[in-house]
Image (cartoon, rainbow, N blue to C red; front, side, top):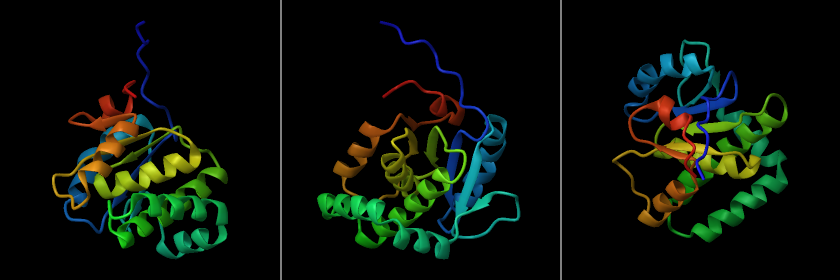
Amino acid sequence: MNTPPVSPPTASLVWAVYDLSLPGRWDCLAKDDAELTALGAVLIVSGKKPKQAHVFLDGVEAEEQWLAQDRWRNTLETLRTELASAVDGEIFLRAARRAVWLAARAQGGTAPSLIYGAGLAESLVAWLAGRLLTIPFVISIDDDTRWTSKLVTQLKAEARAVRETSLTAALSSTSA
């Protein structure tokens, strides 16, 4: 059975997550910005506040949401236990806080139909937020990762798509 092609997501339905404190992310954001803007994506940045009018994921707000959302926090803490040493605890908990912030933001307004993680760190956030909101996510894999291959394989398996080259192609992919 052939699956009909899926149109690229429309305005505000794609949330793209970038951690600007990571090496190379400013360049990645600059490269992706026009394509994401054309798709009507909401760019959510953390780490460093850009001059552009992107949504800034503030660490203090993320911590407040983490403490306020017991159910989501418990869900992610259970997942962290299941993952054991697949990812460093500090990295996981930072991503978990950001995922809870994204989920709370989605519940308070227009929820995305897709979350895109610009690199592996952001893909962890997209994966966790996708689990909380039960929405698909697209990942982009960096060459430089200290995570276990098991976790990377799990992310790839659960992602709607893995960005290889074209961002638009990955965001409109129908692959499971």
